[in-house]
Image 1: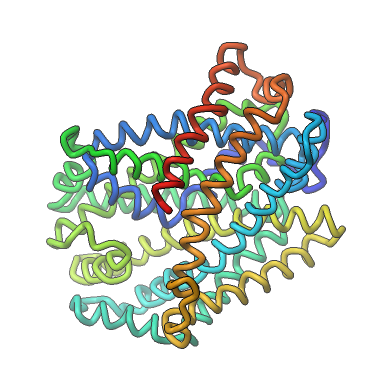
Image 2: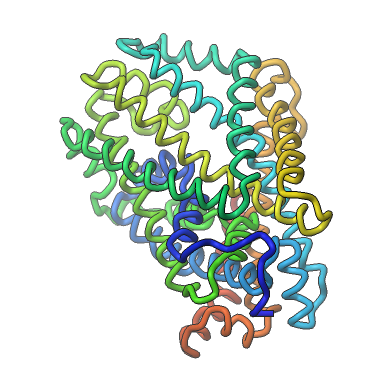
Length: 448
């Protein structure tokens, strides 16, 4: 099986795969959530724990996904099916791929709504809406957006179309071309915003907030937060990395590539924090303001600062690019499966899936207004899909992928794909069989 060719194409190089995977991993969570949880859980001590979790949970599971995808050269569902047959095990393991496919579709539906908010704020920043605005007016502006299904539908539709167009282009003309443009743009925007932040009075306070090393602030809760985020930040458990791994060049090192992805993903999150928090502290704002900080507090801060309109515009473009690269990866596994299973053209498969996720997203944006009273299982549709994927489907998918790679795939096959020494392979096997699934299971249980 190791000589199979993907019908979808291949990444032009190892670095394109790394940038594509980082693009998938770097999303709204990296730009805001990771810096925030770092500052609240011990700064440098938390980063150290997080890196250990990345090493023993995130990286082994990512290696598992990449090796399965590259071995079969197919979409996650068919990859798990074929590798199970090769290892003389039941093909029911392909159901893990089915769950991952549904996870990606469900996540995109509400992710696109939030990305729509970002697109709306890019337009508002460009118009100068937030110049000199008060906190009350900024809050009212965001509330007005949530209360307007028409406005949210417009931007949700734009984002869904943007994403679908890239996926239609396929691996080389779509995903790869977008990656070549958007990821360097993301890095440049981050560096510009970091340079701006370094000129502010609050930079040293922002640095201290994120990097002061205080083990006394670490708690078991903080360790669990680090463990959970190390898993989710790498886009694990939904088949994305498995699908991207199917397009990985044969000569590229799985281990070296995965380490590079994890390092870049963490670096982006840390730099994002250093770019955001000085702005917050310079303006005397609360760094623990949660989601409202991005859409209420930061616009006020940019509105009060010299050159704030320009840098506020750059910030929301940065967030928009991060959301776009992540969204592309959410659709790719399912589109690849539809092409393989039903012999559809990539255009038909992408458009069909785009319509489905767009329609599901409408139920999420209506959850803030017209359907706010509709709460199956006590949650509105937006929160329900968020909870079901983040707390149940993704961790369960991660556990099962780790078990599949460690216990189901014959060791000789995983050794061939990873191309590492016997000792290193033995260590990976031990971590994949015992450490990673148990660690994710703990997070899974406690999240429930």
